[in-house]
Image 1 (spheres, rainbow, N blue to C red):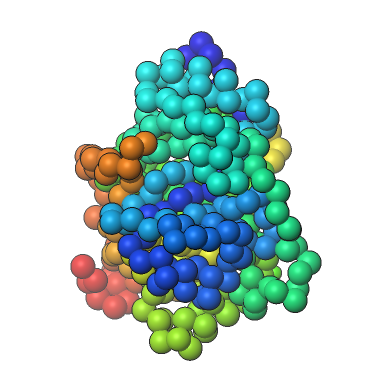
Image 2: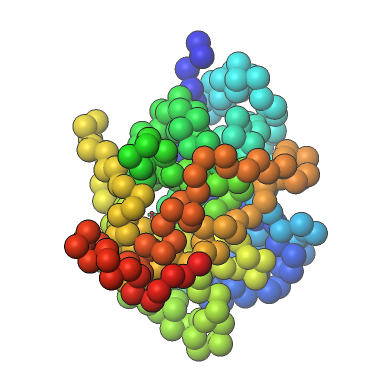
Length: 350
Ligand SMILES: O=S(=O)(O)c1ccc(O)c(O)c1
Ligand SMILES: [Ca+2]
Ligand SMILES: [Fe+2]
């Protein structure tokens, strides 16, 4: 690559296609508590309480539940030309779209990146009221901001190289002693990640994560789901991650799109931030204590669309799959080699 990459600030918004706008609105607004910036019959534009850009999530009615865009904010309008040149040199599909193509967003560059994802780079966006201290409208489960995207891609080292080319740095990864890389967390904003690369068939969206400030807000969302008899929408957690140290919860929306609610990761902004590398057989890597990683978390993810709204084909992962080497160890086994002969707490799981 001769051209410089666009100066990405952070992950900024996503658009999910949902099959029933009303049902999805109930999930994202009534249960998760996101703020509606604008809505019409086609789409609902949502933001979290600390956000002052028009939206960080759009849910749009459509026949095929899928991801239609992952958007990164760049540091200024001038970065759009840089993005256009960078991706043209990469030889992928590049489009320049005028301001207002997406409500609330200025001129943007849209690409299908080398991993097959629909990605948008923008700077200009409409400012709306920032609800940081509007405690009169915060619910007990108030979400503060969008935190990261997690994507399934078959070749994690190749994906890591692509994102390093964009100036992202690795904070943590999961590897084995043969050198297989199962996952990597990468950042531009000084937290653990803006994007996580999870080895698996892809391009698929594994999840979108929002951050809260307090663990009790995550616990409230669990209690709320129980109260509306939708506790089965909780897929994994609540718990404490090993990687990232975040307290977390994964919920599935009415179409199965996975949303993580996440708090308490750590600052990564110094140039010498130490990379943490986990062994795939360390069963505290994904859960620092307690919960096993359920199989659906390893296998299920959302399809993604190309720039014309057509489903992108999915390529299978050829390297070892994490679920094949660890599912029994995920919270079911004993961490000390000496305990290994006891096998798994709950026996063989799958
Ligand atoms: O399950 S992991 O501890 O590896 C993990 C860490 C951070 C995340 O955002 C995540 O989705 C998953
Ligand atoms: Ca706290
Ligand atoms: Fe996550």
